[in-house]
Image (cartoon, rainbow, N blue to C red; front, side, top):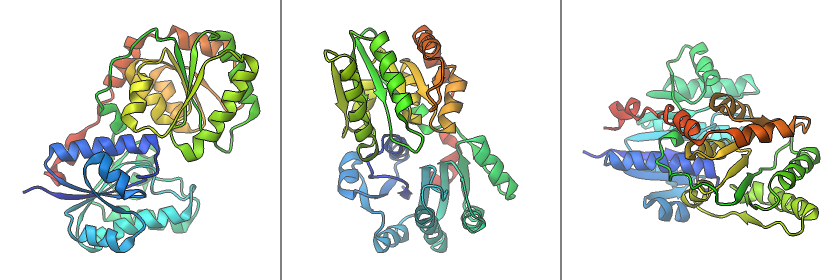
Length: 339
């Protein structure tokens, strides 16, 4: 008999990485024959995109009603159980898990980063919900260590986006991609040095600027576009935003080079075999870049940009693809609960 599965996460906010993860989960559940319900900030859009039932995430009555009619709750992926972004979000995602547990539903913690947690109270909340989960899977070693220190069993998994079948890389298209996001450490030194180097290295190429989450990325992409055009008014640029993850992925696969900040932007480019330069705004990006042997810039603006761009240009697409193919996502760990 098919399972009824509810999915809770940062969905319906037009965030490329989270939507890519959701697409992976939905594809797997559909293959298993499950009935799917998604808690989303934009239920109408989510329902249309994934052809599933969806309810408003902050309508707790609808969430509770959906959980009543579900067999399993999947919480994740991403970093939901942390209080750095906001304590409110930690309470919300924990509350959804607690509701499912109170209803005696199976709970899967799906490829999550656990923490950071700033307070002992937050830590007690997370430890409590995890202690009653049926399966805990985490995406990084630090999260696994935290779970084990609490005396709980966790399984370390790779990012589910590694499991996506991506289009082959189309080489020599004459297009360079730049993906930026605003953050506390963003600064003019980095942007100016990056603009100088792109104009120097790629004066005849089109530059595509990727705003993966319009509310956060678009403003910084527009600023960077102005910086490029001040240096070379003839340079061809285009800002890409408000696209679904499949369209974004297709565009990335057609790039000659990709300079990217977001974790899933770097991941997808590597998996497509696109020569990539990462910008380290978060430790998870640094870790991926080191593992894949792609060059990385800090947010400080004091790196050797000449060396970083030379290393990017010397990358071999086949080796990038080989690295990605050696990071399979272990879907079978969920089979005992979802079948």
